[in-house]
Length: 243
Ligand code: 5GP
Image (cartoon, rainbow, N blue to C red; front, side):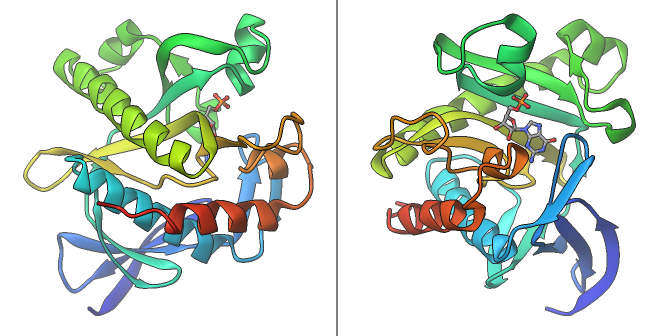
């Protein structure tokens, strides 16, 4: 595979063209941002850790019947992916109240939701990724009613697979963000990444509300030991079979 020109640089990855127009290369970075890039920093080794965690989780999801953009992992911090046109929605699934759900509803941190909640946000940094209702998504022509249903259904399927997977890692999947895209055939597939940058993950053996945090909240909230938390997630995830 020849690496071609840079197509796009995001907050956590640089995307390059390859010699195959249907495939791209994602170079995972150590850069970390939070609060719509108002907070910036680096997490040493994050690029290779997130790339390896996301690779393993994409392989698990593929083995469970979910179509993803993952092709292979040519090096520790590089992932070959299918080219997609990204649907500009962040699809968030929540199992336990945390983050913006607590801020916006007053629910207490850690409240177990009776059923998983699927929330949509507009992927637009200039607007601060605002919450969108179904009617607003339709009004803005971002997705069709069928696509919105397919996004929610797929997100909930992925949630069931990941809850079980993380349970085996003795980690609670609190919530996570997904992005989907349309490939060259028009099929909707899972894109972006699934990693401690995009999931809230709590160590089941640790009751303390700060010490249990194994994800990007350690960086967002200056809890320290960010690298070792990511390394611990990687160790536990890679120890589980994908089949
Ligand atoms: P919240 O809405 O509480 O901020 O985030 C809910 C979940 O989605 C968390 O797991 C969080 O990491 C993830 N999430 C939401 N928006 C973003 C985003 O713009 N970037 C990343 N990396 N994760 C996000």
